[in-house]
Length: 265
View 1 (tube, rainbow, N blue to C red):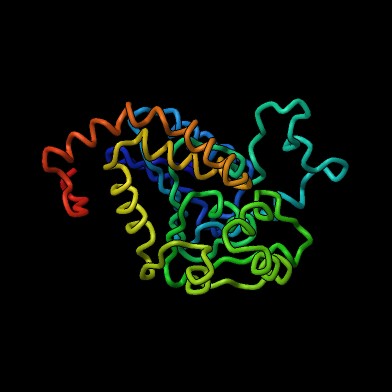
View 2: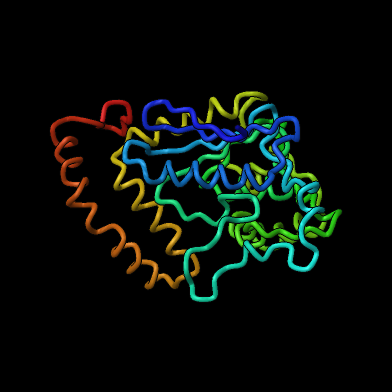
């Protein structure tokens, strides 16, 4: 099995393991990853997921051997979006079209290139080993970005820098990724999973309805005017004050978490 889940309390680590192919994505792995993340999102006891590629590579992109064997007449028909606005099929590399209700952290070791880069950008946060790297390496073969790369990359780094990366296909190191906002943390080689799981445990400590509400509000506000964004934020979050905020305020009034203390909440 190329996909498995390891659990530590409410943190689930979803592991893609085709290390003999540098975790390049084949159809079976793509299906299995979708199933794993849908299981995570539906499970009430799961709060945060870490997405990790086993064996020193996050994902080397679409398995080009499987791409070369596609039906030449209509190679990706099964992946077409429905015309009636129904549920989107899985992305070519699996979960890239899923809109989950809970946070996902990508733990990136080694290459996360072409579609692998797109999968990392699908996650909410990216933790990169200092030796890891991104790159639109599919530029060489005429394989386009079809797992959200042209949508998410400009939102993360801005249009000019996104065009530099997309058009040239060049390697983007962890250091540059951190500097331009393509990843959020850089850690020593071999420590990406450990660091991502530690971050996930920190997030999982908090009241989760509020975490999920703020996460959703940030996504919904993208592209809206300030007024429309504020209205969307209120619609998304107002109920959380009653659901969790009042209880949290009571704990603070009783002495918890004073002076910015996040340890005892």
